[in-house]
Image 1 (spheres, rainbow, N blue to C red):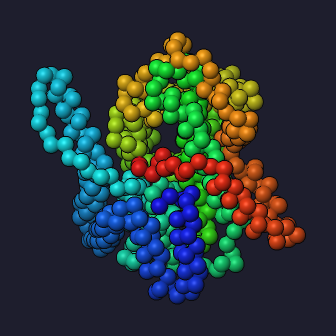
Image 2 (image 1 turned 30 degrees about the vertical axis):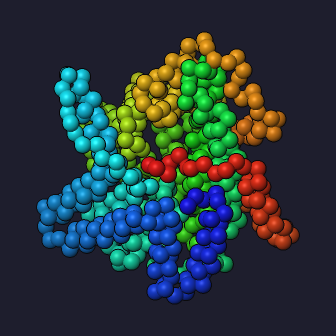
Image 3 (image 1 turned 90 degrees about the vertical axis):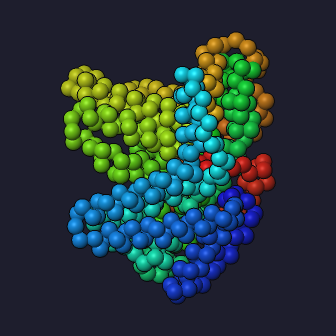
Length: 480
């Protein structure tokens, strides 16, 4: 069940109504929202509802055992077991085929034939997000930052449908306290909720899907048929597409949650305005960045064991973060590429601190240059993220610098003037973010004279998204 569909609209209308009717009765509301979330997830493949149930029960048992364990050694062993079980399930579904293929290819380099079974395993959608959520619960209980909740509360946290497929990665410590008491529908920020939902629909249906169909897919499918300029436009187009696509899901998820009475953490903050790759990761997929920092980078040693160890920890964290995105060497290369950029930025900052360059960093000219260079590096990294394998990714990069071949017509040359305007607006949105627009709308929405028009305006705006868009495409991050 995709967000930008009539099916989801009907589903959410029913859930929204039941949510507020049953909210004063928590004993009925919690089973209702859990059942609705299971229906949402099971709409794609009902058999994987069992995976959610087993994950909730197993991790609740681990967390309870850790909380009740007497000694530190027992608590560590229980935590290790919980991590091993969760990563084992993730590895089986997501990385089994990647591991077998990699071993066979490696042995083939030495002319050794390995007859390893390659099974066709269906990947449960959102399994990586599920794994990170449940691990945050168990680890926070182990660290003493969180008390175990009831199994029903934890099951609601695990299955809550707005974020179950592609985030944001709401931690248990952020979500579970919101289940403590009933919410008042009069206190819901409906203006922000509808703005986020509309912004998400517009970015996904009018921008991301159109860029994919008319610019990006052709360049990345058959790069040899395109010129350097067309390939460059395709790479920039994908940079815009993946931001609009993923941030659209996050916007809709946060907006839908708000209408149900829940606050989810923000996931994006104008990432392409970043002045460094470090700044980019403070703005892009922020819930993942914080998760990797708190549950991987810091436990590895973080900054506490010297410069060399810090750089190794950073490279390892980004490599594993890349592998988390997908089972392929392209994702590992993408993660290592970002790790190298982060280490390089640290070394450059350290070398220039106290020099004239340090003072120049505060000037507007530096920020413009730094933003442009950062965007170029990020866009170059997206090539491997999108490529189906390393050879294909290299072919796209080679074509961008090769120059010859393909059509002489620019990749965006067939766009009508309407879509050209939309692409320009998309680029401006990607660079500036929606915060200024959201702030302006918030001021307008507070005007009591406009209250009768707001409902009509939102209905018309959302209807326009459906009327102007092509058939909805899947979200890029849904299978991660």
